[in-house]
Length: 294
Length: 312
Image (cartoon, rainbow over all chains, first blue to last red; front, side, top):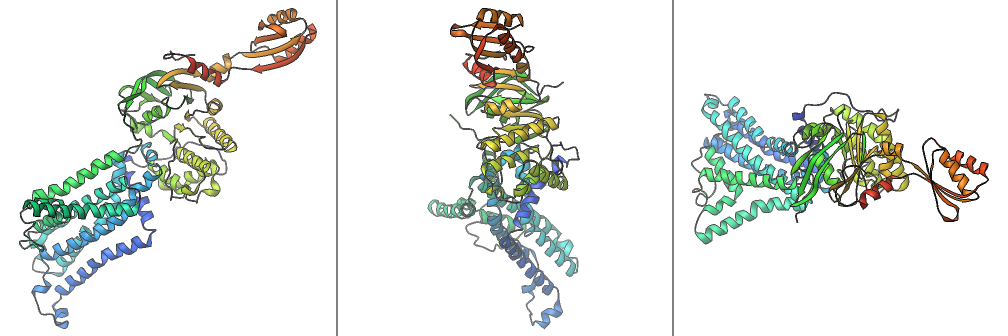
């Protein structure tokens, strides 16, 4: 099919491995995302707190600098589990906002003009499709959650002495695990919304509603019924419970009364439920052909 | 030789309704037309071939690959041009085709090269950097064809490819399809309700009606076996004229007012009819020459009651 010959020829060259083709979606989505200046600005804003945190760790481990700055409080410059809870929670919210911008357009663009049958008429399954789109959010949100947290952990380990790394190595697990469940929840939820709602602004609104309306309803339920189980609908609180328990923090940062009685398996179950519900929606929406019943 | 499509009691149910009722048949030609009125089950059959619908009974194989059990292997051979809009509106044409080619497994550089080639080939070279959403309907059809052929499939499935195209664009598209068919060993499955599209591009036709096979017809054989008809209006010695024609091997039927219907064997040319008429002093005032067209075959199939046995 050379241009100058203007005739059709079949393709006889090599093919990429089947397992790697989902990444084509990821690559093309990233190329589209980085064309947007707003997205780049948002990404930079999400990373900036980590740079301040790195500066904090540097000052915390530099006695000379502390003296120069006339900072004498030893407790203020303590890099322990609570420090990482604050960093991780902050980055989790940054991930939420970034996800609200990126997620809603990932699938809706393909569904709007019926491009999905073109993907699925190739040796490419619905699972590959979801995996490719999930990888976009997975990589992006990783870049602002567990990866910078681990880098900060590494920085602290390098600057601190006296075997700090060995006594705190266990924190690597909650950093990765807590980030993973948050990223998975956010990504699947926004993909499900993207598969359902075509307009970006509406889809972003739906993601906000999904997080804040059930939380409000849960609080109402708690007040009316005199219970605490309504907090299960507050997904960000459930994530915070997972983070605090994961980091073995005995002093929770927020109000303990409403959340303390929720067992940690219930908090995990709450987020896993959101993931499963999102998968059900994706399964219903991502079809090459719609079947009209009746 | 492996048949192109084998239908083995294929039944497909959608939303509680049976759409395809136990289709059985073998299609061996390289270019197969899928005909039928609206709602006959053409698109459902194509979607089943692509693995979008799971058969409730029976099976369908394309080039020996079962659509359900070897779906991925089958789809790796297929290029599909859907009936409805199917594009990503904000992408430029060439990027869209490259994207689809990469998903089919072409490495990035080859995908880009083939995308450009496919776009130039279908005649959209000038518009390849424009977003697909800004294309006219005809251009979108061509872009869909480009994405279907960019990865060099072995089976090209075209669902109503000339939908919404003006006559020159339709003619160009049909020419392209014929070129693609003739330039390679590609198998073609073309679904259309336009008989002319199928007649011009296909060798074999599967006619569906109400989810059943109304007919499977090999157009090549049909054309070969198809007899030529002459409808004549004559003045003069009819009896000697018809007996002379019968002497050439023609079958004649004489009607009132000098009207004669002549069924001609392939070996007899029309000029011989004129020669016989001149020798016998017969004036031919009117002559109508025709063959059985696909339209006749289609209408015959539609008129039949019940399920056809696969032949006209």
